[in-house]
Each structure stands twice: as structure tokens, then as C-alpha cells.
Image (cartoon, rainbow, N blue to C red; front, top):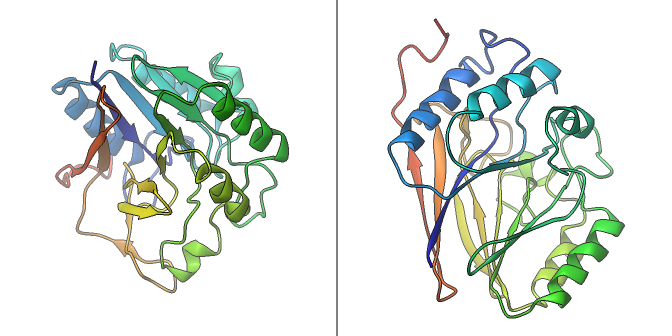
Length: 258
């Protein structure tokens, strides 16, 4: 049985729904994505971190409210701008653990990469979670695996972003390339699309629902010509993965909610 996942990432909700993030209304951009989702088939929605820019409790409650009636199962994980304890207070999703989601033909392994933050944006998979990840991979080696996380485990060739990637990426990549059942690693954090195969593993980054970052830059630079982005991931029963990135139109009223 084939299944479709949609990934939304880097929402950057502010404490108030009318407060702007880098000149745009993050809530309005996210709601535009939900409007798109309402007209398209999806079996699971993944929200891959940086959900609340200042980790405001109100932002998490507001986000949960938006998701309450979409009629699609959803999972969220933390990014470097999030607060794990605030997320745990809003739902019973164990965002501070390595989670295994068993789909019909695939397994999702969902990670928390916020361990040992450097205060600038980087994070790591904790030693305990690395061990849990390896155990999960040892337990079941027949079903294809999709690893889901926030921080990029590979460089993206933007100097300022490569300074805040997954801090223990070398250890992480050594582990994931050992297990042939891992078909792809998907992540957010970089606000741009990436589709690259390294040592047999496909690495996929997804544009943000909020704002996009211009690729290949030494310092922070916005890409102003793109609206909200999302990724569709089709997991095929035969163990193959098909994916595409979609950008939604820029909206003239995205600077404020009525």
C-alpha cells in the first residue's frame, strides 16, 4: 500500500498571530499551506521543527488549534527555536524521545536534534538517542526506513548555515549509512530545498512555510521571490520513495491576519 506524507517545516510562529516574522505573518503562511492540504490527499502530516520562534506557549496552543480539525494524523518534532517542555505540555507526543511510527510498508524514525545547543542554532542527537536509533535499526531490518529530524546532517554550502548544522553529523551519518534499510533522511532548518544522495542515503531538505533562505550564501540572505513551501513524499509499497517540493503563491495580505 502506497502512502503519502506532507512535510511542513520552520513555521516560526510568533507569540501573537499578528506579530511579523522577517516581514511576513507566519500564521497566515501556515494557514495557506493548510488550505492547500485540504484539497490534496495526505495520510500523515509531519511538522519538522522551529514551530514557535520564541517558544511561546501561546504559539504552540494556537498551532494545535489550527491542526485540530484538519482530519489528518499529524506529528511534530522540535527545532532549535522550540522548547521541548512547552511542546510536551500541549500534546502527549513524546517529542523528547526517539519515536518509531510503523506505517503499512515503511517505518518512520523521528529524532530530537536539540541536545547540547550551542546558543547559535546548532544541536545534536544525544548519545542516548543515538543508541536508541541504532537499536531501532537492529530490531527491524526488512522494512524501508525514513529518518525525520530538524537539523541538517550534511552541509548545504552556505557558510553561515553550515556553522549551525547538526553538531555530531559525522557520527550520525556513519550510523545511518551502515543500515541499507534507510532510504532517506528528511529535515528542515535550512529554509531551502535539497535532494542529494551521499553514500547511498538520500538527504532531503524542505523549504519553510514562513520565509526562504537564499542558497549558497556566506551570510544570512532571504529569498524574497518565493511563497510558503512544502514537500510531498510518496512512500511506495515496493520500498521506493518519490518526492516533490511545492511553492505556494505569495499572498499580498500575508503580512497580517484579519
